Length: 500
Ligand code: UDP
Image (cartoon, protein in one colour):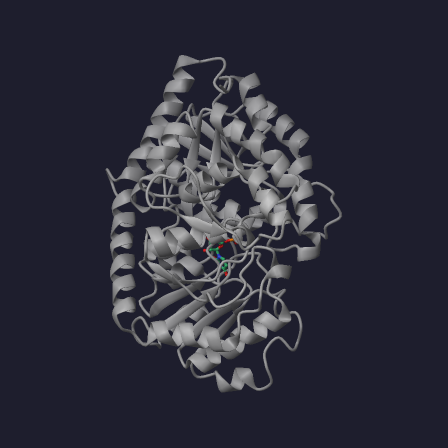
C-alpha cells in the first residue's frame, strides 16, 4: 500500500476526530467529496482531521484542493491505495479519463477494491468513515471497528427521492418499455410538492432494464438506511420540501451540507488543471454576455452532434466559451471546415478541463448550457447563472426537472424531437435548434429577466446556507458534534439497525 502523506496524524497522534472519506472513481464524486473533507477540517481545525482515501491518479486530481486547505492550516490529507488491475492503461483511474468503451472497467474496479478498503480501514482504524454510494462494504468494516459509517451522496435529494420512488414501480416501467410504450409519460409517485412527469425514455437505464445498478440499488439503499447517516451536497432552500421528506424516510440522520464548492477564482484547479486563459478571455467580454457550454467530466458526444453544436453556436451569434472534452475532439475533423476562424472573435474553445466554478463566478457569464449533472446544477444555482438544459444520461433528466420546473432557474434547450437517456435512441439536436435557443435566451426579454432574478435569488440563499449559522453550516457542525459524541460514547454497533 502506498504511503500516507502524514502517517503520524493518520495514526491519530493528535486526538482529533479522524474522518476518512472514500470517493469512487468518478470525477463528479471525487470533487465534492474532497471539498467535503476540506469543509469539515476547516469547520473545526482543532477537533477534526480529514483523510481522503484515493488511488494515485485520482490523488493527483485533488492535490491542488488539498494543498490549499493544508496551506490554510487545516488537517486534510491524502491516503493512497493501488488502483486495481482491470485492464486500463497507466494513470487511467476514473470515468473522465477512460474511453466510453472502457467505462465498464472503471465500474469493475469499483467492485473489486473491497479487500483494499477493508485492510486499509482495519490498519488505520479511523473514528468515522464517509463512503461513496457504491462502497457498500464499508458498512461491515465500520460495524467491526465500532465506528459510524456515513454515505456521501453526490446526487441531489429530488433525484434520489424520485429514483427510489420509481424503483417501487419498476416492473410496470419495464413492462411499458418492452411493450414499445417507451414514450409513455409517467407521474413520479409519492413525491411531495408539485406533480413531476417523465417519459420512460428519459429514465435511468437501471429503472428500465436489468443492469449492474438495478441489482445493487436495493443493497446500496439498505446501507444508506442502516448507516449512521447520509451527507448530501445540496442546500435545504434549493430542495424543499424534498429534504424534509428525505430526512423522514431515507436516512437515520441527514446532513445537507452544500454547496460544497464555492464559486470563486480560488477554485481554479479544482478537480484538474484549470485553463487560466479562459478567465482572462472572459474579462474582455461585457457583463453577462457569454454562454458557457460544458457537459461535465465524462459525457461523450458523437462526431455528428459535436459538429451540430459547433454550427449552432456559430449561428447563434453570441459569445461562447465551450469546453470540448478531448475524446470529442480526438478526431481532427471535430469542427466544420473554417469554423474556428469564423468564430475566432467571439468564441473560445477549451480542450480538456475548464475551471468551471471560477467560470460560473465570472461576471461575463450570462447562461450555462449544461448536461444537468448534479454538481453542475448546484454550481450554477450557487453562482446565480441561469441554465439551458441538455440532459444526456442517468438522473440528469430528473435534475433537469428540478432546474426548470421546481427551482425554476432554467429552461430546456431543446424539446423538438426524441430525447432519450439511451444515446442510441436519441435524436441529434440540430444546429438550428441550438442557435434558436441560445440566441432566443441571450437576446433577452421577459423569460431571461425572470430566470436571472430567480438564479440570483438562489445564489443569495446558497451563500446564506454556507455562511455562519446558515442551514448547511449548521448541518456540518451538527455532523461533527454527532461524530464526536459517538466517539465519546463508544457505541459498539452504529451501523446495524435492521431494516423494517
Ligand atoms: N468540471 C470542471 N471543469 C470541466 C468539467 C467539469 O471543473 O471542464 C467540474 C464541474 O465543476 C463539476 C464536475 O466537474 O464539479 C462535474 O460534475 P457533474 O455532476 O456536473 O457532472 P459529471 O461529470 O458527473 O457528469
